[in-house]
Length: 152
Image (cartoon, rainbow, N blue to C red):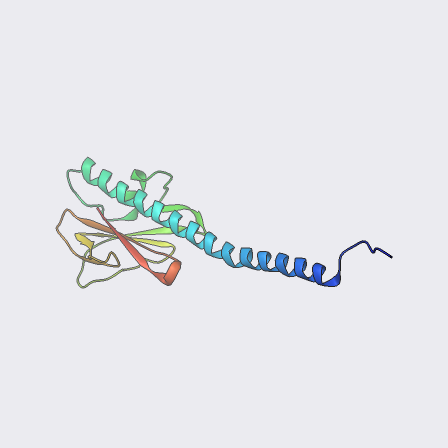
């Protein structure tokens, strides 16, 4: 009897198919993981801005900030109202007094909107009228193009 050493074509194709499936799963999952990491970074920056608003109010006897430049010194790593790089750009900080109606203002993935005299609606998706001492911080996320709100 003649014994042949090596793999059959079917075995080789099966191994290659499994390897291709693993690579496909990694390449599909990787962008979602990166998107979630960027969104988490946005939430972290939003928290820093909310903390900066609280510190500003504490140091100024409950007065509200009126511009991003006034608020910038109170947030770590902030200079002239901009934050560090994310997706080839900097965050823009927009501070404005509450006007009327439920809104997200200028909030998007690169702009943080701070509304003074506002609070977050129960869903946390936009700002609504609040007391003079309240503030709402909003930023857009990549997942579902949602806007999230954090009260101060």
